[in-house]
Length: 109
Image (cartoon, rainbow, N blue to C red; front, side, top):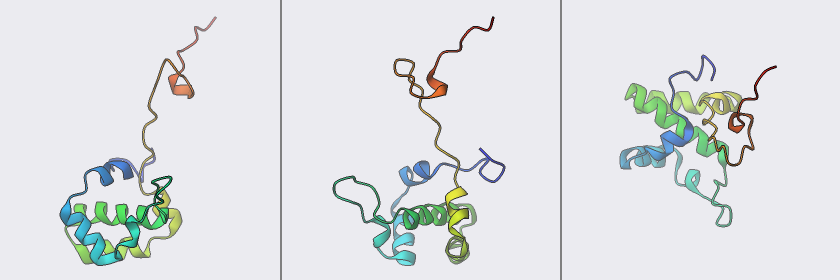
């Protein structure tokens, strides 16, 4: 987590907490294509547009100013859009330690 992302929800958390008013604000600003998904993978067809929509929702919630939030999200370079949210925390599974975080500590000699 960087200073830029400290205190922000993850993109998944913003998506999971979307309500009707959030959806309508995004539809009004971006149309419906931001929600188009691949029927096989169920992933967004335009992932950067989807992520920009999540940025817009977060900015809108922080300021309650739809126009300003949309302008900020629209003018944000792709690199800033990608860096806007913190990474989702890695899920730990001691039974299947595929990540370093899931491995048990080794005793030091």
